[in-house]
Image (cartoon, rainbow over all chains, first blue to last red; front, side):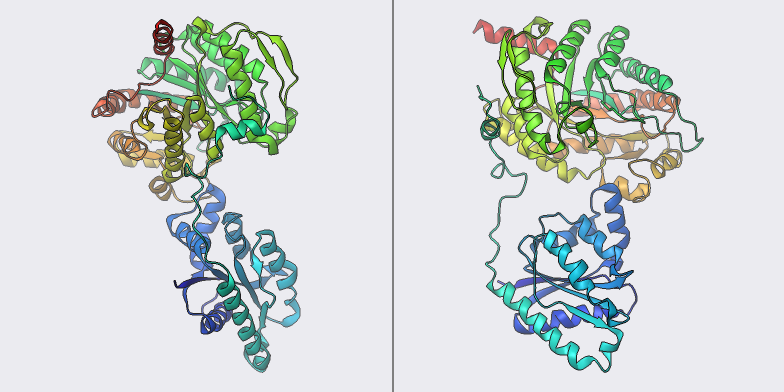
Length: 204
Length: 362
């Protein structure tokens, strides 16, 4: 069965170095483990994400992406650094996703910035965010500053390769998700007698 | 099939004029809407329950008793009564009292509310929302069916030899709907008791509610109350109509764009395409409403929201006139066509009394 990777990129400019890093990471992962890759550019969903915050439900286009994230075997999440953290759009996307959607899912985190001074954003902002969502955040996180696309390249490339390898290994060793009964199916419901018993109420 | 309106009782300012109705105007306006509902041939008026501004209906049975005295046929209901933060003993007493005054024209919809601070204001813990709904209803259910109740639970002080008065009219408890936006536990609760399930069906795409209603229907059959098709389903909806579609859209758009629920989000056009909201001509409303049956199966009660977000009373009353003249007769005719005989009509006191008497004779 083909594994599925979703690559979420929150870059805003075109071309974007955030997307460039996302592509390199996806390439590194699929070199180790063939997978179907879905690229998600959050810029294209910016209004849909904002609307979901306001209305409480996703547009059809956003719903499709959220579903793909839930079904993915692994996730690559890349954000530009804005004002000392992930971008607001990046955070908003993970705000509207169901808070159980990433449970146990291998997630490779990465960020881009103008200088290397913000690289701790990975460990101080992204890692706690995905830890809260109970994702399995891979040990290697990748930060690319502008300089890394030039002279610094010798350090960035091996780091990308290592992160890709970690993601591939985590996805490969993870048992294929067994389909569980959907939330509102009669098979998933807690029988009412049980609900009453939990409260010590005699159902008669 | 019963048709009616449900009101949140909000006093948001009219975005086109900036004018905000006084609480007094709004409360009297809700009574006027209920009277108009009866006049145009609707079956039900339901009021919300809120305990914070800008909402007026904190005391639903007081409002409904006043309406009962001014109407002849209308069923008085709620949307919803807070089963979590009201004392179930007081709910039993208040609604039995109302049932007598209204000669049986009463049912109620139980819900958990959508305002977090109401829990601490009434001494409860929001994290216990579902257990409160389950325990409190278990007690309410007993109080209406047993003359003398002994009770000990987790949330309220125990009762020994307690009799809730007045006893329900003719010994028949008011029909109960359970309303929920996202909790399968509540669909399960409604199915267990053989009560109704109401999907608010506004503000969200229908697909979400379809799954909840399907769960309720399947479990209703599981508990042996009848077939899945015989379960009691109610749906909400919202409309704004004018004779010409473009007039409805032009007039409603400022209310949509500045709505406390819709404002700042998708366009009116996108929102209409994604949710049950209808803004357009009577024909468009008929078409959209008839489709509800395709998605949910034959159902028992359709309630519409017509008066929120600062819409003036005069406009809301006009909406009901248009509904009564151009939409309701067609909906009644179309919903009746192809409806299997075994699918129950909307619940009434008379029908429940007859059923009870028939069971006693057996």
